[in-house]
Each structure stands twice: as C-alpha cells, then as structure tokens.
Image (tube, rainbow, N blue to C red; front, side, top):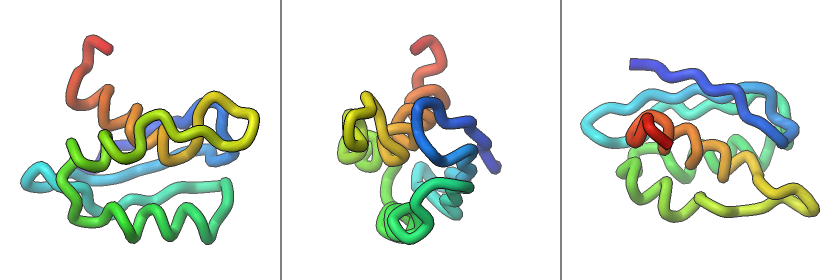
Length: 84
C-alpha cells in the first residue's frame, strides 16, 4: 500500500512510501534537496519501520524545528500510532 504525506516546515512538498512486511519501500521526496533526499530514501530502503522512526525522529535542519528525515519519521508515527 502506498502512503502519501505532506511535510510541514521543510522544503520538500510531499513524500510517498510503501510498507511491506513492516519494512519501508519506494521512498520518494518531492522538492527539497534532491541529492540528500535521494540518499536518505536509498539508505532507508528495506529497513524496519521502527528502526527508521528511531533513527530519523528529532533531526533538525538548520534553524528549523524539523527536517525532511524527521518528517518521514512523523509520517510513520501517524500510520503506526494514529492517535498522535
């Protein structure tokens, strides 16, 4: 199943990904720092979603209170813990 998420407070305008067997697949960011976001997407490919959340949660970008990796973690939080 493909999930789509609209990041807040960062340069990227949207992100999408799939979860299969509790692992992250086909992560794509649109907008933002192209090379960095492709790198992040490649690094998290096939990782367990809990591990991705733990590693990326709370990362900041410059003066911002969040980052594109943190927004991916927040998107996973919304899927896994919808009450948050």
